[in-house]
Length: 422
Image 1 (tube, rainbow, N blue to C red):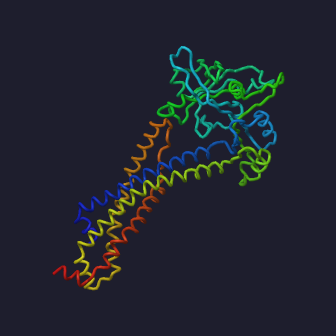
Image 2: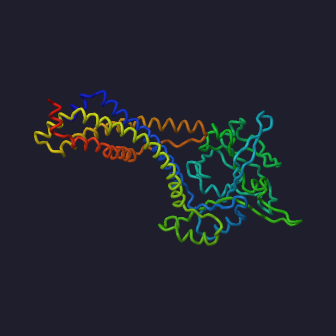
Image 3: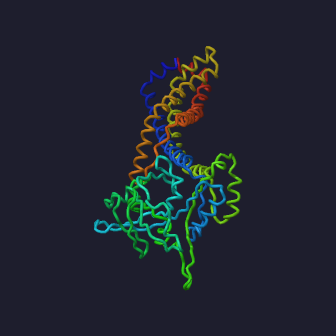
């Protein structure tokens, strides 16, 4: 009887299912995008070799004595790797290329230190993005740091594919990096890939990224020494430090003891464990989830109101039939469940049909975001459990809306309904 009623009103049934499916499309698209972003970021952090990240609250002053702090932490025996780094915006260009210098993100690292954080696949997680290297520094140390930054310059650099493509740069080519009035020539030792594609807004704001030896980067950006009269004072300013725990400590279930003494020793810096950073990402994503859910919920409510309206119309049309059913002894509960089942079948089918186009829409939206911003937006989440949870949300919400026409059907007056038949 249920299926006969649904099939008999095929146009109305079809429009009802389409309304629910349309709501499901937006819900799936928005929430799978948000979930995919979180899964991507959490996955990168979880798979990285970085157990603890030290950063500064005061970007202007940074963290002084970066090299000495690295040596001090390594001497404790608690860490298998400590990698200081600095970052700032600078300009880069190539003489004779016909392209004006552009703004790039400059990063200073010590090759021998950061190598600990690079996996066997030549990938690492740095500054909230994944980097894949093709080529590496010939000099693994940081020789310019010696004797108060008077050691030799290596002039080695790694650049990303965006910068290499813009200037048609190959391995071994030279180009210039600039900071304020300072200009230095460097040589390309390797090319790396990041999540930034060099399209859209990213291309308008930043032309790429470049990695230099830490001491050389500090010298170029004036974060190495200060002069007080004739006295040279080493500043050695950095802006963050990646720490990899020793094997014994990494296998420990409780990191609180390992971070407690760090926070006591460096109270003015931010000490974040892997778990802290994952929680921070999840907490920050709550706002995005609330926004996406709110937008999608408006569409969902409209779709379910359409279902409720259609079912109210159906109840009105079947008033004589319902009256006759009540007259021959069918209970209010049976009438209630009959209408409720019909509504839930329509909502369930519409919800299932909306999942595939919802995922397709999410992929198209991710591609659009990449084209507009230049950031390779992570693919939407394809977790079956997550998709089932969204379908369940639609079903539960639909159950609430469907109670309105179902309850209306139980209130049909038997005498008036029979009179209507006559």
